[in-house]
Structures are given as C-alpha cells and as structure tokens.
Amino acid sequence: MTTIPKIFKEKIDGSLGKLKVIFERKEPKILLFTENDFLFPKDFDKDFCDSYYKVEISSNQSISDDQNFDFDIVILCNHLKSEEILAWKLQSMPGQPFVALWAWDNHHEPALNSRAAMIADAVFPAHWFAHEDMANAATLIAPHLPLCVTQWSSVFLASMEESIVAAGRCDKLYGGFFNHADAKERNGLIASYWERYPNEHVFTLGLDKRPAYFSFSQEQRLLDWSSYKVSVILPLRNDISQRLFDALACGLIPIVPPEFPDLDLVISRHDQHSLPIVRMESYSVEGIADAHTRALKLFDRDGKQGVVRRHRFARDNHGLRNRIDRLVSLFRQGTAFSKVQISFENGIHIYLK
Image (cartoon, rainbow, N blue to C red; front, side, top):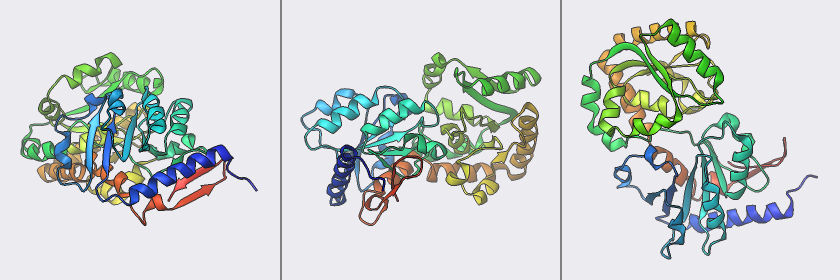
C-alpha cells in the first residue's frame, strides 16, 4: 500500500497541529502579505472593522523580525516573486504561524508554484482547474479561493453606487490587457480584433505600464470602467482574474470565452444568466463581435436596474472581505480544516474537505 514518506508526514502532522491550536482561538490574528501592495486599496481595513478576527496587510519582508510578531495565520498572496523566502522564515520561527499560500498564479509556471507550495502549510488555489499542479505529499490542498475585487474596498464601492448608476456610458467594447510573453494566442486575437474594429477600446499594454494605471485615484479608475457598458474578458490561460469582478462592480456586462473552466464554480449558472454574463460562441474576432452585440442589447434592456444588480452582486459577494472570511471560516471546528482526505491518484494529494 502506498504511504506518505516519513519526512512529508512529519510536515503534514505539524500543519495539522497548528490547526488544532487555531481552532481554540476566538479572535485569530491574520496577516495578509503581498509583494504587490499596489493591487490593494489604502482603505483596506474599513471592510474588516466588524469582523470577528483581526487582519493586517503588509508588503515588508522584515515584518517577521518584529519581536511582537504574533499572527496565528499568515496569508501569502503568491505572485511568483519571493514570497517563499518569507514562508521559510515563518516555518523556522518560534510559535510558527499557519502559512496559507493563496496561489494567485497557479494557472501557469507549475514548477515555481510547486516549489512555493511545498513550503506552505496549505495552498488555496485561486484557479481550481489547475490545482493538481500544486499537489504534493507535504502540503494540504485547501478549497478553492478565487480572486476578487482587490483595487476597491466594498465600503468605497458602496459610497460610489450612485455615481456608478448615473454614469454616462458608451457602446464601445472595453478591454485593456497586459502583453505577457506567454499569452501569444490572446495577444494575436486582440491584434486581429483591433485591426478589424479600430474604434473599439480593446488593446494591450506592456507590463511596464501597470504602475501608470494604479497612479490614478480609486475614483478615477472606477469612473473610467463605469463609462462603458460591456467589457471583454480574455484570460491569460483559462483563469478568472480580478477584471471579471471589477467589470461587474462597475455595472458592466462581461463577455467571456466559451471555455472558462472555473466560472460555474465561482458564479452559478442562474446568476450568470440573471446578471448577465455573456459567453462568446467562439474564441475569435467574430465571437467577440457577436457577444458584444448581444451584451449591448441586454445592457440597454435592463438599464439602471441591471447596473445596480451587477454592482451589488460583485460588491457584496466577491470582495476581499468575502474571500478572507471564507478562508478564516475554515479554521473552526467542524469545518473543512478538521477533515483530511488523502488521494493517491496521480501522486499523493492531501485535501482538506
């Protein structure tokens, strides 16, 4: 019978031991660590003022050197940078916190993701369709934790609802994408679409232009999104990124590829129909154009009521507070983290169910 190698079993047992300690905490302390802190709003904490746990955000690797460091859970947002350096430090310090790796980019670079995963206590895959690439005998695979709205807090979005609803909107298709070297198919499709429809607002930018977008204020970014009716969602590699939820939060109708593996896991078919979210018939210039036409008709049919419906759906269900609530709720007796399932298919996968 296949068994977990001893060295890996010791690590799993250590992670489960940490869980037992956290189960007893009535008010766990959470650290959210990200090297891309520009992705998060300055008023991040406003969404957590009434939570039963305490949460802080940091992008400073030296935070673990503070003698007052006493977090129970550290959520590492894994952007394939140097997060694993902090993970190593956390695993070797006294009073080790539980290291929860929120894998934002597990849909590509499997070798880098696998290396980071082996250091963590548990991995929360943002993209479930690719979660097996991170499975190993030393790490717990936690439930799906999709990405969400991160550039605006839910409190801020609520304060801007009237502006979103009243915004004047154009019929042009909206979609700005970064020109990733490993997104040749997407880059080619966007280039072909722009050649056929040069007046639409669909384009690519170099990665060096990302700071320019975030140099605008929260309000400027939100009002820019809100000046359109429809946004095209073209994943890097089948992934659901923030832009789907950003579009909904600003009242736009998203159009998505025909194959979008995790969409039904994140948004029910009923909600996809009622919001609505429009699927392309084909991943092509013609598929985008047809979906754009259908989405415009639906937007005009539902008017301001549709804008409010989409805005509130994203704001109330797919913000950062929702995701961290989901993660922290698993650290309680009777939840997924109190049950472990071991699968030997395609290697050793240890799931929290």
